[in-house]
Image 1 (tube, rainbow, N blue to C red):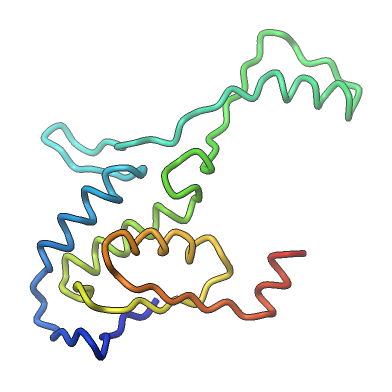
Image 2 (image 1 turned 180 degrees about the horizontal axis):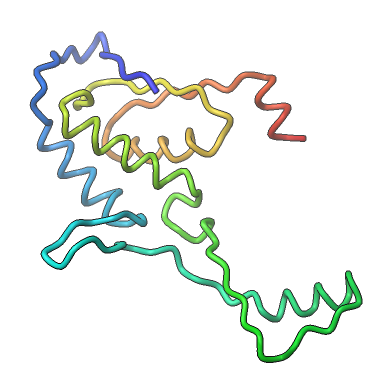
Length: 149
């Protein structure tokens, strides 16, 4: 990921965090997605990915596709990232990377983010538009073909 300055909104790198941007980021994005948070009693996960009961689907699949009868006492749960804010597992690394960039002063209001992506990370970065940041994602046709296949 590369962060560039907008010619219309020139900013200077001074290693001080953009507190306004950090506040908007924390309230509009980070507060809604799964992330680790340090507290007085140690680390905890905030907004964990919801667990979904997959037991019945697995039992039906085992029976119809493989001719297996699974014991009725099993329970199977899965974490479906499509249910989290942003709809992708790539939201988690985006939150960490962008938060660090803001905290270190590398990302400030008025800058443009360029990202070469095959899809999900670029979609996660698109959430930054709600903060007034411009995001440009580049997808090569070769990557695009691989994703489609």
